[in-house]
Length: 97
Image (cartoon, rainbow, N blue to C red):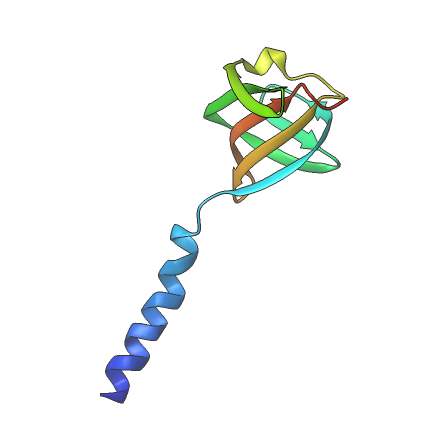
């Protein structure tokens, strides 16, 4: 019985990071290239299927509008959803200056 419990525990320790999901980071874009984005000194790879949106705030409510990678500029405030060091989603925060 003890061996089974240890085996199950070890399996959980191995598989949990796989299902951990996204981590979110925000900051200012300091550099951008075709495949990489630097946010406050941290360099991230841009996934080929990366989704980009504008985040707007109107009367306290937040809304998303479609955007493209061309809309991301140095100096923009962004929130990025990353898996490891790969960006899956970029939210350009237009309400922050």
